[in-house]
Amino acid sequence: MKYNLLGKSGLAVSELCLGTMTFGNTTSETDSIEMINRFVEHGGNFLDTADVYVNGRSEEIAGKAIKDKRSDIVLATKVRMSTSGNINGVGLSRKHIMDGVEASLRRLQTDYIDLYQVHVWDHATPIEETLRTLDDLVSSGKVRYIGCSNFFAWQLMKSLAYSDANRYVRFVSIQPQYSLVSRQMDREMMSLCLEEKVGVIPWAPLGGGFLTGRYNRQMPEEGRLTSKVGESAWVNRASDENFAILDELLSVSEEAGKTPAQVALRWLLQREGITSPIFGASRLEQFEDNIGAIGWELPAELWSRLDEASALPDDYPNRFIHKFRRPFE
Ligand SMILES: NC(=O)c1ccc[n+]([C@@H]2O[C@H](COP(=O)([O-])OP(=O)(O)OC[C@H]3O[C@@H](n4cnc5c(N)ncnc54)[C@H](OP(=O)(O)O)[C@@H]3O)[C@@H](O)[C@H]2O)c1
Image (cartoon, rainbow, N blue to C red; front, side, top):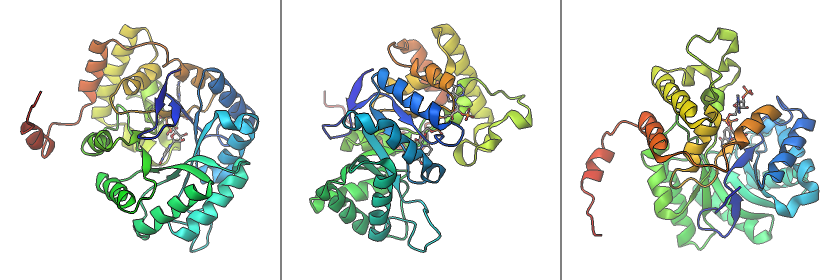
């Protein structure tokens, strides 16, 4: 396992992060704890959870699994989504964040969170209120670093500028959806993160399972990703464009002698600006497949084939602005 520094910080995280969204749901508690142990044996130190995953069960299981090795782990969790029917039980207000951090610390059985992330932008709360609260949490020692997830580029840039102007801690990382079948962040977010040295920790690096080779165009209805709501639902994944990317992935995987999941992760691991893809696995066999993404290199020619097959169209404004780059070297 290799390690990367998270954004501008001095925090070293493993090149792969283990996602825990299925823990306590499709992954039993026993298998979840076993998965974390195996991940740590492989050198993994970076775990991602959220207050809302499986109504808090994911945090409880992660906390239990790492209790005896807390300082070896970089533990990331999130706040923002609705955690109660209470009118203030949602969002990025000072009240919800302060209540949220205490509830997460209790479930995680720890007195600090390494990386506390805002799950998605909150249109109702001024970002000034959120950033001041997060800065207070870092000063109090309950949180060590702060990150965000699911932001537009302007929202991240506004946050960074406000933190800098007020001498608050700034977001060290962003967690966007990013994979061979979801490259929208290439429009603006990726170049912003490189410019501002913000770590990128992509979620759904396997497209929620679409990029593992288990799905095809003929898949009968009941075998599809329809059980998944949100971004990885079949309706979002099963486009002609995505199946063309999948075809290229299957062909590259065969040439590389690796599984599609390993190659899909490898494409991310070898991509500039990516700190640590957050992969999920419902079962231990899937974990074993995915962890096989480390310890080897995808040859440049195969990497480029995947990169070209999945690239966004070269359209405005990127096409126009990039044309006027001034070389100084
Ligand atoms: N910030 C956010 O808004 C956000 C959103 C989503 C996720 N996340 C984080 O990102 C992590 C990963 O997200 P994700 O689970 O959507 O992403 P993913 O890694 O793209 O997909 C994981 C899913 O794909 C299937 N799978 C994984 N490995 C497989 C293999 N080798 N062979 C066959 N199928 C395989 C499993 O689905 P089945 O259950 O169908 O077998 C597994 O649950 C989460 O645990 C969470 O920590 C964050």
